[in-house]
Length: 185
Image (cartoon, rainbow, N blue to C red; front, side, top):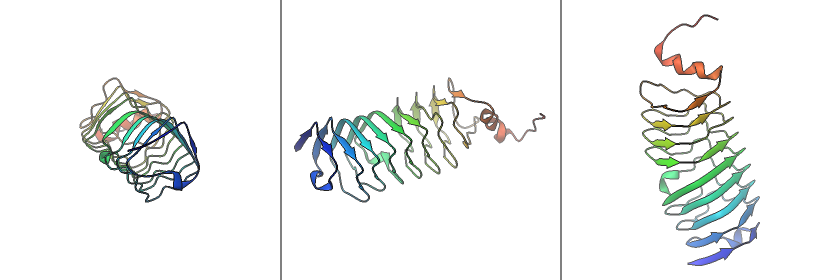
C-alpha cells in the first residue's frame, strides 16, 4: 500500500486506489466516478472537490473535513469505517446512510435533499443549518442529534426516536405533521 503524507493535492495523477493519505489537502479536484477503493484517508481536508459517485468501497475515513464539496449520491455504506467526519457548506443530496450506526458527524450548512438515513442509529450528529428536504429518517434512532436552524425536514416521531435531539422554532412544529392536527396561531 502506497503512503502519501503531508501533501497538497491538486492533480488527479497523485491519487491511486489502495493508498494511504495522511494529513493531506485535496483542493478543487473533480473525482466524479474515480475509483479510490481500499484507501485510508486520515486527518485530511477536501476543499471545493466534486466527489459525486466516487468509489470508496472498503475505504476508511477518519478525522476528515469536507468544505464546499459536491458529493451527490455518495454511498457511505460501502466504506469500511467512518470516524469524526465534518461537512461544511457541501451538497450531499441523494447520499445513502441507511442502516448505518454512526456518531459524532457534522453536516453544517449542507444540502442533504432526498438522502436516506432510514433504519439507522445516528448519535450526536449535527444537521445545523442544513436543508433536509425529502430526507428519509424512518425507523431511525436520532439520539442527541442537533437540528438547530435546519430546514425542510420531515420526521415522524411515532416511528423515529428523537430523544435528546435539539430543534429550532418554527421548523420544530413540523414534528407534529404526522399527527394530522391543526394548530391555531
